Image (tube, rainbow, N blue to C red; front, side, top):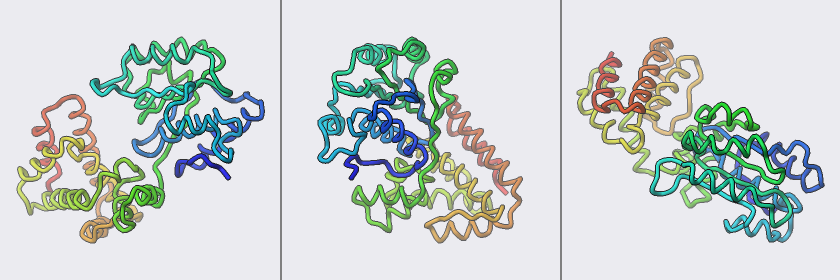
Length: 326
């Protein structure tokens, strides 16, 4: 029986990675590229999959050891000398050249146990240009006993010179059932876990933030937006609601996903929604003009882009809301 905890979802990706680990355990390293890029939505298990794969690559039995071998136990404890993980330092907003060079120095050493040395870069999309360029020497001239996995939410955040030297694995969203199962395993009640998963669009990280209070806040925000569209509430109150949610990207990501759910409903594919009130709105969207809904979604996306470029949040959001009023 496999003793290594496997991430949920991404069946094809995991099967491919497991196959490479099994081949390596059997003495066949062909196909095990030295550089990998795992990309996809935040919170869908990319980093956990990278760590799981590192466990399989270092295990002499590709994770099928019973009881767990020394390598499996060391990686589970985060202390394996051949497995290096780096992320954004607590006092910084990006991974800089110092962190990049430290990783490269450690990967240049020969492994102390069977299997390759492995480097996992969490939030690789937040590496500075200098830090990414520092990686190029390893990517162009690998030492032959190292594997590096770059984990990024968006592959385009990596330099083309870096992307072109990596094998790219794209991760999609998790099924709602998988997201709910993770939440239940973390102690959430099944009913609340299912409701959170339905709102999270395949992201465990997002679902974890939807407790009962978070679900209620989301519903209130979306209902206020819909009331604004019909002229039932004042624009300034909705502006304030969105501006107050700065830590969650002003909730514009949630708003965009909601708008796209209405687009799907207009095309006859209604999304599941745990809120009865929001379900009624999606039902009414079934007869709406798809092109108009898409135009509204585009305005939300444009506003998100403007905020990422440091536009004034209150003015940008107010302008967006003025344009969506019916």
